[in-house]
Image 1 (tube, one colour):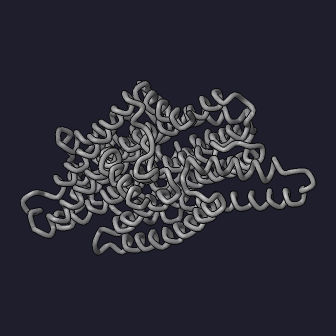
Image 2 (cartoon, rainbow, N blue to C red):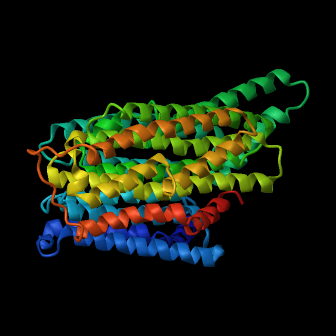
Image 3 (tube, rainbow, N blue to C red):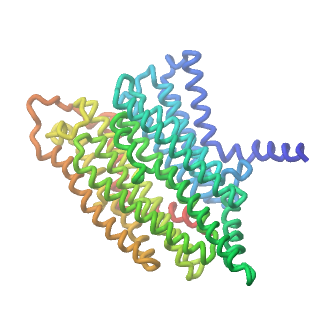
Amino acid sequence: MFQSLLSSLLEETSQRSLWLAAPELALTAGIVLLLLGRLLSFDRVIPPHWLALLSAMTAFGFSLFLFNELNRHSDLAGPFFSGLMVFDQFGALVRVFLLLFLVFVLALTVLSGIPDREDAPDFYTLLMGAVIGMLLMCSGNHLLMIFLGIEMASVPSYAMAGFLKGKKKGSEAALKFAVFGAGAAGVMLYGISLLAGMLGTGSFPEIAVRLTEVFGQTVEASPEGNGAAALLLRSSAIRTLLLAALMIFVGFAFKLSLVPFHFWTPDAFEGAAAEVGGFLSVASKAAAFALLTRFVVTLLSASSATLNEIYLVLGIGVGVIAAVTATFGNLAAYSQTNMKRLLAYSTIAHAGYMLMAIAALMVLHAGGTEATSSLGERSARTVEGLLYYLAVYLFMNLGAFAITALIRNEIFSEEIEDYRGLGYQAPLLCAGMGACLFSLVGLPPLGGFIGKLMIFASLYDAGHVHWSMWALLGIGGLNTVLSLFYYLNVLKTMYLSERPVTARVATFPAMSSAGFYVLLVTLPILYLGIDVRMVSNAARRAAEVLFH
């Protein structure tokens, strides 16, 4: 028996699973090469960034090929690695996003000069190791993979936050990041154990089945004469499920910088290099939202009257957290004088916007009175909006951090006050920053406008189930107006303030590799605001898979 089980496991691993995990294996091979280069000293001949770029581009090529193959042959979809992971269009699309983002981040580090050549192998090893964890997160199909993926993504991030040697703020930020991260991970692990213990499984497909069985038998199908026992079982099951969901949500809230688990974000972003801040602000958000969406959809797959009541309570609660997070992030950004801290609070606010889509999704399913096909279509539109927002967020937030890093190299400062008059000395950098900031606000015709419009449309749709989503829509619109002021303050400093005579002159040539990089990051923001079809269609197909 054991021998047959072992042989079937080896057969599965050697064939389908390894092929579907080709992007992760390509990054792993790159990490091995970087470590061997440090050990055997051939990194002096071959620059470490070339090894990292080659590995990342190979992984991106594999992910794009697998995504296209899946679109042509839907029978490729399904679980792999004994059901711990799943290969579907949703996970495949997020993998493409993450690996494309990794290529952009690696290119930025080459242009900005951080890290230096001595520390480059260690830095790129941490960077690619974190991305491997994020790839596991977006394809996770088991509670074990939730914890494993989040920890694999988090631990290298702690080290990267304090990677700049001799910088006190960076060391302090990394320590704070690691301590709070360990606490959040412990709470999340306890929640996972509660949920797995109650249902007797950690597999996502089985969780929905067990939830329906538990609540169907103990609450709705109890025999007559057992009213007291049924009531006791009902309350016990509800308390356990709510507590487990709350504890698991703590881990997601930490990764997403949601209030009240946001406190590490401003210090970590200010203490770390702008390149690391850009990576943490986008990649960890994309992977965490992908995993959160998959986990929430798993819970929503179970259906009963009691569960619908729980979904409504959880959905409204998530909506309240989203509203508080967006409002706090925008209000706190007003008083910031450091560009990285401003972008950190902006990141918190945008996590709130994206969480609104999750709240709308849960409230939609709490209605539970319409046809399954109609509910699936409305739910898919909600996830489509979230995916589109993540695609735009990749470019506009990375662009803002990248331009902050390039300006830092010119004027040796990240203080907004030192940006005075830069619009005339470095017009390409400031124009790119303007495009990124206006897109972060959500102004047309930029991609951020379309992304926010899709999420707000899902809130309006969910408002027909419960009025709280309409209130959340109003709060989201108000926050959009509030954010305009502090973003405009940066552009006002660049263009309307005179450059001090004693200030360092910014000599940024537009016709350079760095200038080309700025265009490469900012032009997609305009494209995604004008032509939404390509990304929107891919996002819709990926979202529909989750609800079929």
